[in-house]
Length: 145
Image (tube, rainbow, N blue to C red; front, top):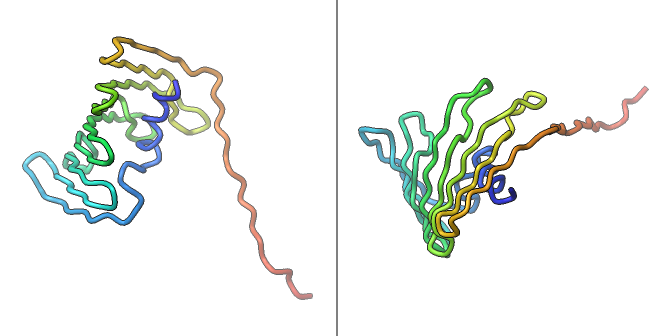
């Protein structure tokens, strides 16, 4: 279960690109864009559709990683429906997701994980989910009478 959710989190938070300083170059193609990146400890090429949604890519860090994704429209915007990763050490892992709306958030309801190398498929259903919202505290100096 942890692996399935760990794969989902970067897409949900929009943290697919490296956080450290990285050089990026966009190239327009007939089917969208190629995004090349080169940074500290990471290089790669991502293939984006015309709306800049990630379709697939190859990333080189301390290991070789190939990724594919499929996003679909949902009531509150795009969600990750499928993805796969192929690494030198773990082989191909495929992930599938269906969603539920919890307190206005689109959260996974079903998570499927298939490992081709280990010849195993796991399916999880998340039930009784709750969303927790942060509290905003406004701090200001005291007002003078």
